[in-house]
Picture 1 (cartoon, rainbow over the protein chains, first blue to last red):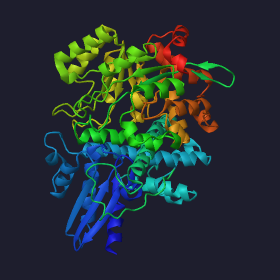
Picture 2 (picture 1 turned 60 degrees about the horizontal axis):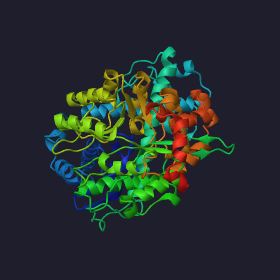
Picture 3 (picture 1 turned 30 degrees about the horizontal axis):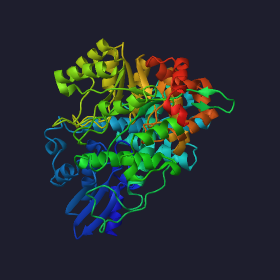
Picture 4 (picture 1 turned 45 degrees about the vertical axis):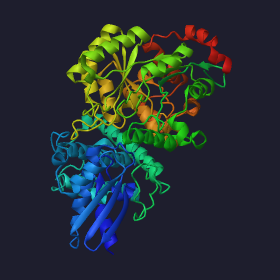
Length: 252
Length: 339
């Protein structure tokens, strides 16, 4: 099914701030396919959600869906947002961020993206560290773990999912090439020293907590805004064609 | 005033409240409509079902309703009016110092009236700030860095003009600077919720208190870090508190972090009325205990003394209110008769 293929691509698009796929967050308001043209309706928890993140997600939607060999055009339709027109027009004409917002942006989004990938790294790592600590692992044993040890850690299903998520962001950052390298490192790849471990853990815990708190808030707001399948925002009239997927329960 | 089961009286200052008019008549454009819709979703999403209002009431509830909700039913003894002008979105503004001063005039002992300034107003704004001090005796201001003005889409505390305004605040005795970091749009490629400018301003103006509303959410981690470095940075708990109902475990984790990093002496209770009703927040907070594992991990506890500080003593200290004297004044006023 072509629709499933589109959703599989969309599942690879992440909210940069919440580090979760758009499909899981309920941000995809619907997909319609006409021949080789795919229209993706995309919606956010509030009218005021940060425009730069909205742009990143819209650009990523376009890029991922365009990877399907049968797709010739992708039309991204961000809905009910204060920059709806600017973002849709920029993305669908293939403009960069600076080209879309010449008077508001001083640069493209690489730096912002990296800031939030670093936070995502820390949060994924902290969750795995916390679950190892809860199982009784000591600091030194944890820091002695190597990249190659990660897949075989004696963890339950939830723990294994955490290890997998951490492993994939290590890979994304090019930190997983050497299986004998330490498994737990700073976001830039520097090893974590035993002496600084507790302080490091406290810091990344704040990152994880903030991210989790925001994710919880955003999911709740999205449910409030669109949960009944009815938007009270002006300008959201295109409901007939929308395939609304049920919003999944919050994962905690 | 909240009375514990042992009969102890807890004095409550609500650190952040509004009397807004966001009715369609006052909305200037789609941004005004979008702004209040966003608030309404916050309200619906985090309030217990019994406290959810219909949208028209939420858009405009009026002074009498506010007094009843907050002071008669909500346990609150005093409230801090935090004006939010938003004149580009609402014809007469969302809620201004002048509008708030009317209710302050009716119940002078109940309200702390704060002002507001915007560095983009230049020299004229400095004069306006001075006039707020002379007319209303303000001791604090609420700053909203995400406010739109003409072609501008926000500002930072480190902007040269903002620095001049902060200096002026110091000269005028306006000691309490409440900062609300909204989604700032300029420059659009930077993090819209970045709180780093607070750090610099707090270092430059050690005689001022910087109260960061909703504890820098959604950048709680950066806020905690700044608050540890700067002695004059406080956390306003608006938006954080309502999680006590829907996500008590998150609330406990966040509060434990705040107690550890920011300290019990620097956190201020706030309902953000009318987004949330103080009654249920106060009740739940008074009944709340930190789970054992969180207490152990952070080495902090939420004792009655800590609750008293957060609910009123900290705000009283930075606004120069003597709680015992104030209690006697309040016992004589019109609200006391309504209770």
